[in-house]
Image 1 (cartoon, rainbow, N blue to C red):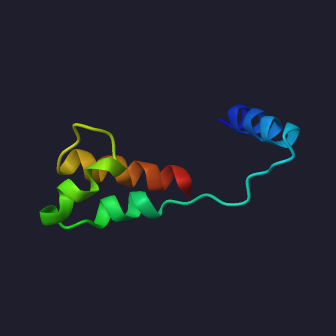
Image 2: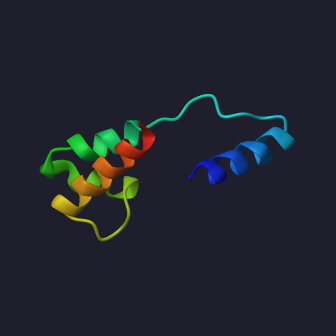
Length: 66
């Protein structure tokens, strides 16, 4: 939500920091990974997700980033 973002930005500002960019490269990798390499990428998504669930999670994360 906008309130959450403003609060988070305020906490960072109090430390002299600001958000300058957001990244989604790991989520993109999870989205595009070949099933043969799925186990190698398990550390980059929530445990217990498989196949379509993993794809749905990665897609959702990228949509939130954009």
